[in-house]
Length: 151
Image (cartoon, rainbow, N blue to C red; front, side, top):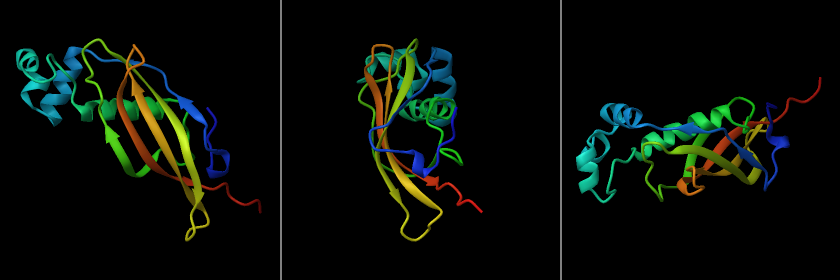
């Protein structure tokens, strides 16, 4: 995969990832450690919740998305260095057996006014399940270095 500097990004570019399948044990393990709410750690509690079944934590979905992105086509020089979000939503629950992938679209590219060696890109990332239904959508702001000037 090609590492990209700020100059290599343009509005409208799309970067995809591979796929990850999630199973019940992964949902339980993540939730027990990081989000131990009943509807994430107990199937019956999940059925009795607004989710109407076991659902992965949204933070688990975010962690899975980060893994997908790191392994995917989006390769900013210096790594995926997020400095904040403009929005974040989970429109649909992630269930055992779901297969996730992510799609990132460049919304804005802007050089820094105060630091000439870098800039920012705004990226909307949509995590989709196997039915192409969005399960997470966020707009992130990433710090990206400029290509070093030739000596």
